Length: 394
Ligand code: DHB
Image 1: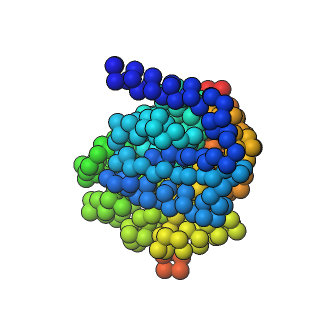
Image 2: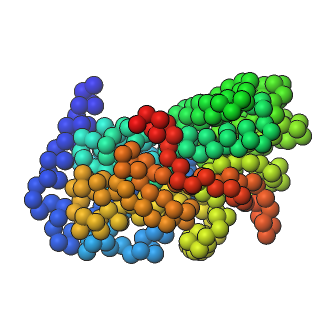
Image 3: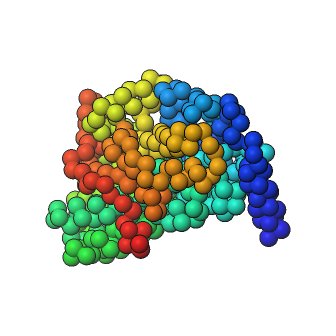
């Protein structure tokens, strides 16, 4: 309790000093962005992708906006919420950053909500995707997605394509539970049946016993969510348990067939149906340029949905600064972000002014081999999808 109070007092003092005339508005003074990502540990691929995308955005758009130099201070939270909170506090109080950004997992984003509110510092969530995150602070704006947003279209697709019985298998924390609920609600509303709901631990998951239970239930399909980077391990155990030959269809959110690891999975992934907001194979001028530049700058690495969350998050910060004429007051920046709309490599996107969440197309995709590599090939588009949880509430 004592520690927590000290943390908040420190952040409050920072907010007060930010309001002093001269600070943050001095001509030519820099704008600092504290970028907090898991650069090591089990979710390092998220950090690697977002960091690369942030650097690419600055390489393409320059390190200056509205006459102010932009500086990114990158910190590794190792995917641990206590570390995220401590780093956010240090960045706000000591480094005097104007914006914090990143947040590779839901608990990490949740950990900075109170700090962002207290210090009035915008927090751009570039990765984490539990619906409720934007409600943790009025200073949170999200450039990634929400699990219900991408899951509801998949449940609808399944119901319309002859799938009647489903077992759901999700990672047991915020986004997995969001996906499980959203899938069941939409699927059963169309007359489908969810015969088992399985939850796998976030840390060191062993899918084998859950896959055995899924196989024994003999559903038409298994619906899966696992976070970015974990899909390859899931797919390996899916094959080891013989589910690829069982006649049970695999349907999933695009987190499972993540572009970062899709090629590693091999032919077993072929035919998997997923829904998501970004595929490296998205057919547009903006995306072709994005993928080519990203590969060029990063030793041929393919960008995934985390990268596009980072890239668009930077766009949000740059354009908000342009709108405020370089002003860095937190409320002004967040207000400038509300309702902002632009063409992303993923397609047209905007920030919902009511919820500060992203509105975007969701695509139905199938894993196919294209020019010798596996890709999520989009074949249907559901346009301008809002997070359905908050859409229902408001
Ligand atoms: C979250 C993390 C992921 O890697 C992902 O693909 C989706 C959601 C999260 O923790 O919110």
